[in-house]
Amino acid sequence: MSLKNTVFHFSQSLDPEKIISNLSLFIKKKILPGHHLLIFDEIQASNNALNSLKYFQEKAPEYIIASAGSLLGVKLSSPKSFPVGKVNFLDLLPITFYEFLDSMGESGLRDYLEGLDQI
Image (cartoon, rainbow, N blue to C red):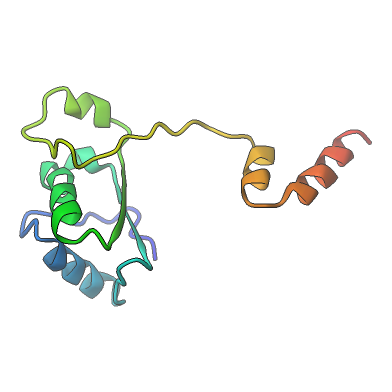
């Protein structure tokens, strides 16, 4: 379930179990560790959300967390605090539709579509 365009506040607690409990109540579905992927998008908008990553890594590493922020680099130039050593940075670059098909194991479909281009 996507909570796109929904703001979830991290002001009550940075405790991972409390965050998970609140999210579960909000989406009306139990969040299972190791089964569900939690994505904190535009994480730079909340210093508490950013710092919660430290607590997830230390107290609840069984949860799969990804975060993204279009202005994260700008925010990190002067953060209030940052979970040093608890965050791995990855740069994601755009891919073509054909590259997407390959990554999804659909190379045959890619070949078919490329063949159509030649007609």
